Length: 177
Image (cartoon, rainbow, N blue to C red):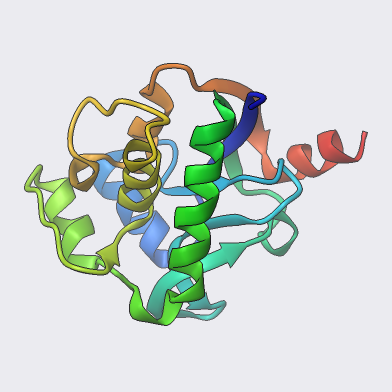
């Protein structure tokens, strides 16, 4: 089966939660998403379900066009085998089909900051979800458990290749070209 490309998008939005994470960690990026259908396709993550409310939050589909255009970001691509891609697609589809069963792990994000692993059934924070999905499908080997990986640390994973650094607007411009 042919090699496929998936994308990891790291961002730092202007929400109060993103600003709080950035203040505490000084990380360039505070949110992680995974996309299997190219830069203009949907990305998936654990985030707010409604634009103006931080909670409830859970497994959501994100589109770059919905974000504020001036959001700092870094888009990475990762080449995976066709079989790994199919495992990713199946697991993501299965989770998304039952997305109401999944919740954002506020406690997990807080524990991660203090380097304390906290795994709760059906609870994830954004980078835990992305890293765990990649690891469970055999796409990457992680340097530490998904419960301890902050979004900005995903860029240190082997074989990730940056294809855009700047603002989201630049991804939209690149995809259109």
